[in-house]
Image (cartoon, rainbow, N blue to C red; front, top):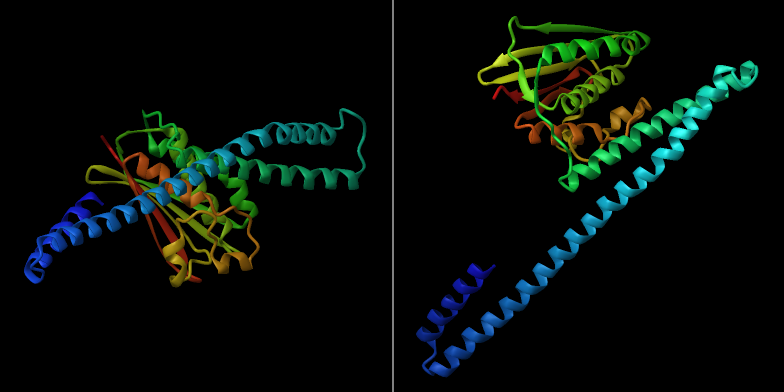
Length: 282
């Protein structure tokens, strides 16, 4: 802004000396122009400071509330599991059904709170990245084992391909695991009926490349520019009443970019989507 004020003052001086003969009037014009621009600069600076402070307070509020919710929610989940176990006495079939509903909703709330905490850490630049060397291929295989029951229950087949002798990467395995979980969960969840999820890992120049392709509902072209925004969920997904907070892709992009990689996708409505990311080898 200082550069703009300086250039504007010099411009006012040049114009004044050309069209105004009285040097005092020229000086007055320059001073008046500088004063007006200075006041505007102060107003703009104060506005940005207030916005930054509001954003910081919002992130801190989300973090504090999420932390406070974790303990009672954990107690609720523990109590529900204890009641379902029958250790406190026999439960009727109808009661067990209600306990299951309560547990499922507790799990959903737990996932939402976890996502909100991660978003809060991202926005306050406090997301920890502890880099170690690990095998991306082994991590994907481990996650596929965990997702297979969910995929089978959803009538979805998971296929995995990996090139031979893939090098290890230097990143935070817990954070990369979260990214793959988010992408895999979306791929399975957004398939309407029978379908296939293909996961591929290969080397591309100085990066490892991971791709997850599904045969799901896809993303409408006009909504694709919003896909990595917080809380965004496309309209065609909402039609199928699938669960989700709209935070997974926002979190995934933040983690990949902080790890030095890139993330992207291509999608066609009613034909499926392909999400990919890269991670540097060094």
